[in-house]
Length: 205
Length: 227
Image (spheres, rainbow over the protein chains, first blue to last red):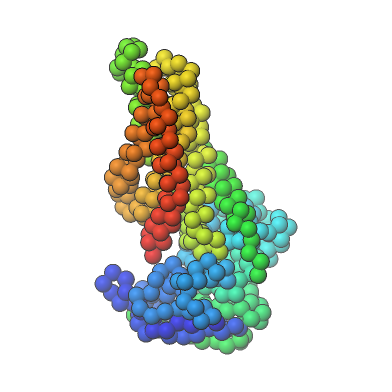
């Protein structure tokens, strides 16, 4: 279970949000909304452990994530604005390398299956720089298919995706929740998937 | 959940960096050419005074190697920072220390090993004996990793800053001085028919210290830069 208490974020000399408290249990979908610049990305990065909160604390199974570090990272998958796709590597290499780095070695076949499901089947040997924005996003999201983490932190991952891909991601999240996973998603899309418990928090501008 | 071995992740990282370097060969080659050209400019500008050249050569090769290793520092983390890979690396279930060490190792293979290999060839311009050349190479083998490891701290600290290049040099160059003194001193000693051991031992000690502490400092710097 992920629990936050009285989170506060100050960037520069501006306070983005304060007193954010919530808890996410297995099977929960948590949506973050709010206008641009309201601190959605900052909140997600805090939950990733990349940005230390100005005040308050974030606990995973009752322990502060800053003291868990690597142990926490092994249950989290984060996908952000910057997709972590390498231009010089091919689609297949990108997937295998990024999952290898996050601690999961996948076979070529497993990787190809995942790419097929994401609709990138014929592009596996293409350098990633030739992909369109939406295809790059799909490639980054393929990691969700191969990772075995419990907590997904997704920051605006639905931008530049077509309708079919958005539906696909939603069904992935649904499957993930059904298996007892948790997902925290920052997006403006309608996210109520009628699966698990759904919470929404709106950050004020 | 089974945790994958740290070695496996290290291997993925090094393999990835080598593939990337191969697809951007020009970057690594430019460092090498820079080194060769800087070293060759001196005999041309000073003139064919063998005695003079021989006496300044060790220091000269060392300074050229130092500058060449500075060239590639800016690229060490910048690419991964821009496309978001670095964020992902900070969130791997393995210690960040290992990732930094892996990147430094790949960097060493790509831009520093060629530099060390070409040194004997470049050194012939100065009319050195074989044993003096060997000593120069040995001193570089011990010294150059120090440059890239210390440099990685600076590269991590200046990540994403405008004008980071200048700041990087200011931060890092003073820290290079001990390695430079011991390294050039060792190479010099053979020419003056002195004994290079003391300097080589000291250089080795500096290397051990940097291998242990620099990746740790770099990891801390990376976490700060990505906040």
